[in-house]
Each structure stands twice: as structure tokens, then as C-alpha cells.
Length: 247
Image (cartoon, rainbow, N blue to C red):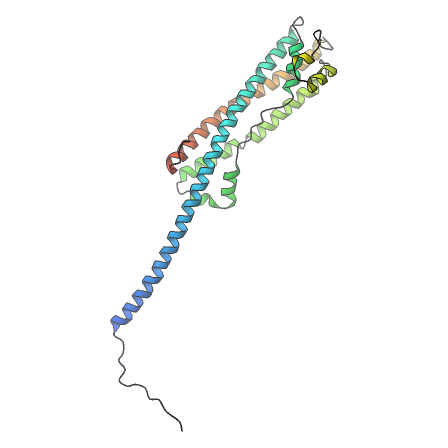
């Protein structure tokens, strides 16, 4: 036997206020969820930006040390070049120190390479957008764009050193240079050490290459001083804006 269920004819319809309250509760729940998610994302972005800025500040500080070290290195090499040229011009001068300095001059160089790791990471991750102030974003970009020129200048410096190596055999004894390479001190140079030729053209060729390198070192120092100015300005800006301590 079938049982038929009849609708409750006495069921009361909801009042408009009840529908409105239900809608309002749903709306508030969705809105609060949206704001909570937005707040969480904002906190994460701020934390990530703070870490980036701390890392940038650390990079800038290490760059300052590098610039200062490079300038000191270049100055010592400039002094050596000055002594080498004077020693080659004045034939009666003791050439032992000239030999030692000429060999040491090509043993290394102060190639300047600013630390761009944090900046490149921010760019590749699309996180430069986290910096809301355009002035700061522009200042960071300008610093790293300008220091990128050190790649060219450092390559030019290497070329000047190679030119010295290529020309030194015109006037300096290879056997004495070899002894200095094994034991880089004045004791490796014979007391009666002399250059292998006094031909003025050969001497002039060697002196020319040394003075070109001297000029390159001057240029690198100027670039380092200019980079230090920009570095310090950006460092101060970041520390003030993001309240990074000046440890």
C-alpha cells in the first residue's frame, strides 16, 4: 500500500530579514577569508623583502671593502711602475729591485667584480615589484647598471697586463724572472743583474707598455671611487628606509 506524504501546508516562509542575515553572514565569511589571505600574503611579501634588503646591504658593504682593497692594490702597483720606469731610464741605478717589481707586477691584478647575486635573484624571481617606492627601485637598478661596466674595464686591465708580459722579454732576463717566480724576494736577483739590452727602441717599447698600464690603474681607481660614492648613497637609503642597522 502506497503512503503519500503531503506537504506541510502550515510551514512558514522565511522572512526577508532571515534571508538577508544569511546572505550577510556568507558575505562576511567570504570577505574575512579574502582579507585574511591578503594579509598573510602581505606579511610574507614584507618578510621576503626584508630578507632581500638585508642581503643587498650585505652585498653593498662587501663591495665597499672590495673597492677599497682594489684602490690600495692599484696604488702599490702604480708605485712599482714608477720605480721600474725610473730604473730603466737611469742606467746606473741598481736593477735588482726593478727586476723584482717587474716580475711581481704581472703576478696578479685587482679585478673588480661587484656582488650582484641578490639583485639578480630579485630580478629573476620577479621580486623587484616588492619594492613599492620607485625612487628606491630606480636607485638599486642604476647602481647595478653602472657597476656592470666593470666587466669591460676589468677586461681592458687584463689586456694591459698581457701586453706587459708580451714585452718584458725585450729587456729582462728570463732566467732571473724564473728565479723570482720560485722565490719572490730580492735574494733571488743577482747583485750585478742587468737588462739584456740597452737598445733605446726596445727600452721605449717596454716603458710605453708600463705607462699604459699605469694609466689603466688610474682609470680603475677613478671608477672605484665613483662606485663607492653610489654604493654609500644606496646603502644609506636602504638602511634608512627599511630600518636596517648599521652594524
